[in-house]
Amino acid sequence: MEKGKPVFYKELSWPEVSAIFSEKHTVLIPIGSTEQHGHHLPLGVDLFIPEEIAARASEKTGVSVLPTIPFVPCSWHECFPGAINVSAEVVIKALVDIAESLEQYGVLNIVLVNGHTGGCDSTLVVAADEIKRKTKCSLYIASVVDLALDDVLEISTSPVLGHADEVETSKMMAIRPDLVHIEGVKASNIEPRSKYLSVNYRRRSKILFRTGKEDWKRLAPDGYIGDPSVATAEKGEKMLKAISDELVCFLNELEKGSVI
Image 1 (cartoon, helix red, strand yellow):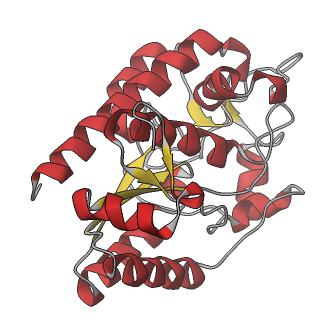
Image 2 (cartoon, one colour):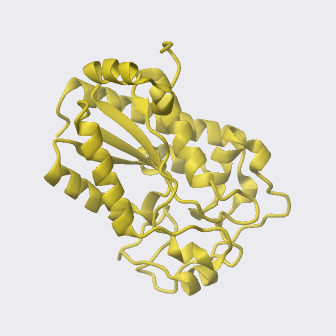
């Protein structure tokens, strides 16, 4: 492996895996949803973004990046063509199986880089509990927003940040500008009727809730919440750097020993 380059698990031979895990006991796994992101973004937004962040962190730390998990719960997005929903039970079982395999080779820390953010957090927390109970591994969930939320909020200019918004669009402009088409896109800032509920992470919901297909169609009639029109690649690059830098710091802490 060359120094200063990401370490992709799928490119390694078994002797290389053995050598890496004799020194490093942490892996990164990008995880996200295959779902609609409005007219202006591709179905793979939740995959492209965590893959990019994981690769940047791997480049600086030498921590291996496992293949991306591309399917998680997202049934509310099936009101638009393209979404592939996988049940929470399937995702939890898969993650436990992965942890049990990795444990054999000396892995102690599994860091999910979660591109679906709040969309599957509850599923991943249950998986973390099961992994802790059944193995010596710990599962950590690093959201591609929350990891550097203060920076993301400061860099963004639109009042509503929700889905396929200024944030995701800016990141995609920095990663894959060829897949971004914001011509004619306008702000869509519909919020839930109750003041206690929110889909805007500038104003977090006071009460946890879930949306169904009909709810989502009302909140996001064109598939997005926020204002993608103000997105720029420059903003996206700043966000990606802030998030990947925070992830690098956490990975370095993990490799030094217990973080709890």
